[in-house]
View 1 (cartoon, one colour):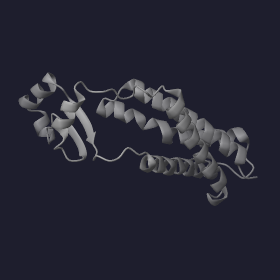
View 2 (cartoon, helix red, strand yellow):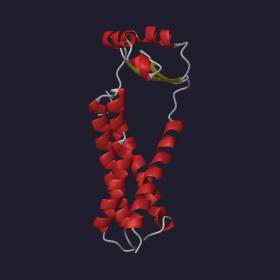
View 3 (cartoon, rainbow, N blue to C red):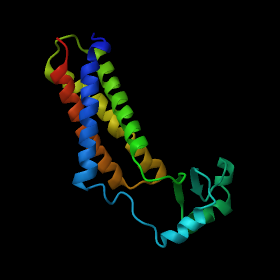
View 4 (spheres, rainbow, N blue to C red):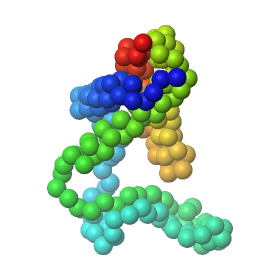
Length: 184
């Protein structure tokens, strides 16, 4: 068993490298460019939504399981549109909050990868054994939860597939760093 404290270097290094890789993916590779598209007559939609406070919304909204079974709700669902949306407050365009939270998330995934590998493997473990445990855990952290958005919120399967591919890249980076820096 390896203590989490002795894995701080691979935890931080893997989080930093995943952060850099994600920046490269999103700034230069461009395959996420069409994850979102513009709505028709965006200005009219923005005006219509201007009185909606920040939050999570569904249209049509039933409010209860019993109401979901009503003929009125069923007709609204059939007629469409069905909208699942997050409304955020207006703010100057900046990514500092999101990038900070993303880095913290990368650290958390690396901590869990280190924890699982550290409980399963001894000091001086073989590179491939460390790679397998850390990589599998990191993949679960980065990729698997993406699919619940496709299942429950009808997010495009292609978007979830691209995010899963990103998660695989992040997991391979994490696994490689842990294998490389595993204490002996």
